[in-house]
Amino acid sequence: MRKAEISSGIPRLVARFSSKYIYALLVEATVSGDKILVAACSKELEKLGWKASNQNTSAAFLTGLLLGKRALTAGVKEAILDIGLRRPSAGARVFAVLKGAVDAGLQVPHDEAVLPSEERIKGEHIALYAKKMLEEDKQRYERVFSRYLSRSFKPEHLTEHFQNVKDNVLNTVKSDE
Figure 1: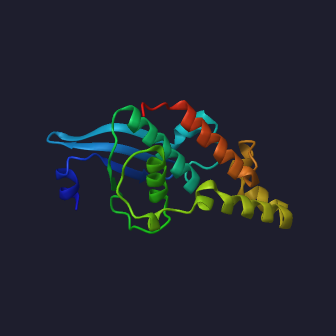
Figure 2: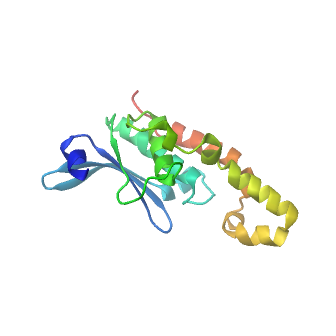
């Protein structure tokens, strides 16, 4: 499969995950080795106001969106998804990165069935869980969401926060569409 990807001449949209961050890259294969055309990391979202986790589905989408906008600005209009050795699982973060890049305007062949739902991308499941936990057990809420709270962010407001940061990404990176 990699040979077919490389010989296609189309850049690869590579999504990788570390223990702290999500990385999205557009990579072009050359004879001397892979060349990174455009890159984005979920750590960069903090500069755009992101206070939630840098590893969740929402952060994956925003990282893909950031990459997609940069790709269009750099003149890259299409790519093929490279998930590496990950098993494809519908709704996975790797497909959230893909959805972000596609929503930015990058042309990437895919099946709509593998993309996470809008509710999941916006973090509605996290916000609802946080609201429920806050009502039922405040100590557990403070323990589970300690990282969010240490950033002066209430996880029950994740959907609104996601939309604000999404708007920041779209307004910060201008593309020549």
